[in-house]
Length: 417
Image 1 (tube, one colour):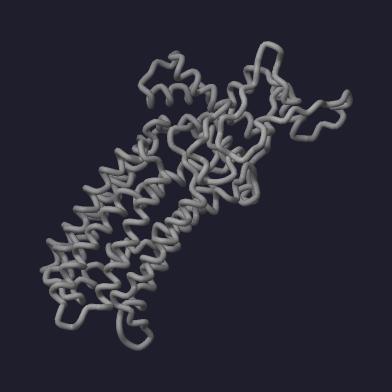
Image 2: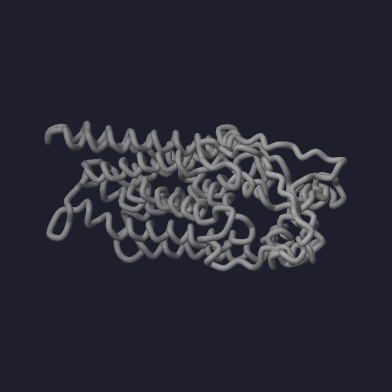
């Protein structure tokens, strides 16, 4: 729905809303922490129902996206939706061009047939790699240790000798909200890759420092340890809230083509909640002392720090830079750029609308009045487009996919590289 130049910022605003909700929950917990009886938990749960009702009412007025309406075959409604989102007249040239690009991309995807869950893993271009990227990023987001702090922070602070654990938990939630705001401004200027790598490095340093301090400190240094714990956890929350908190959702919302977007997003989001459940269930057994527990205590920060280091490596090797290009052009990037660390240099060389309207030949040779521009990407591709001369029996040798494209009036379009 969002234009490409602010798409990341708007998705980050989604994470900002989540952090505001966490802050509100922390305030309620602080206010009810001294209550006796069942009201200590009935009040927080009752207030949650209020926001559930607000969410249900909001769904009634939630507009459909232009891409979804194009997929449903309602071009007029898609134009109206896009006009509403861009605040432009439906006849504005920029809006007409964007709608035509969305429609041309959808027609190409229809020519390839309907999507199944098998296509999510084995489809082209590189859908399996994209799914691995999305699932891996969502899993590593949970393994940074943020949920340990948000779920069990008060219990852990109390065991660490912090005098007012509920107040410290509230302070961390305030930092969580405020620190998300810088991410809104730099997610487009820095890009997804740089922001995620800086965040992973910052989080890893904080986690490992906490673990080392706890390992090396003596019994008589508990007040100092508590102060250092709060300090470095605050810095950790800053790095997380400005990077991995929002940007993981930005990347997973961008890398999947329309054909499999719903299925791929469902799988990657499921991996997020699977790890969320696993961490919430298993962490007490890792931290607490007693029979059947690992009794790690603060040494668990070694684990979170190691996963933060792994997250930085994963971003460098797997995350493509998707800022400042349209969702349709991301397909071209995955086709042409073979290594994620070279994706920053990618420059789109065509659009689905251009291929459909300019009438490039099946052989990849442009008409006489056109000259196909060579790719300017930083991929390892030796040549931008290979020209292939077809024989006179081309129609007899057409595949089923070629016949479908020809029936749609797009037989003169070269979709290969």
